[in-house]
Image (cartoon, rainbow, N blue to C red):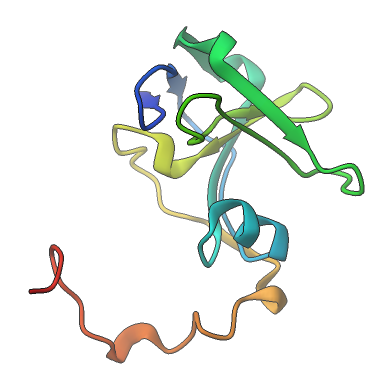
Length: 134
C-alpha cells in the first residue's frame, strides 16, 4: 500500500510503500524537544520504500553530534518534519504526522518511556473535543 505525505507548505511531497518495519512512539527528551510534544511518532522502513515527488532539494538535515542515531530532516520553508534517511543510509524514518493518508497500522512499541514527561500521564479524565473548544 502506498501512502502520500507532505510538509505543511506542500513544497516537499513524497510517497512511501508499506509494510513498515516498526511504528514507534519515542518519549526521549530529544524527540520531545524536536517535536515540541510529548513524543515523536515515527514509522520505520527500508530506504528504498520512499519516493520523493517534489521538494527533495528543499529538505535540510540536522544531526545531533553526540547521538549515535538521532537526526532530523525538515522542510527549509515551513520547518515541518519530513522523512529522514538513517545515518547508515539503510532505513528511512517517516514522521507519522507527515503522512496525508492513513498508514493503516498502529504504533507497535513505546520507547524511552522512562523519559516520558510528567504532564503526559493520566490523560483519560481531561475534556476532549472534536474541534477547538468554545
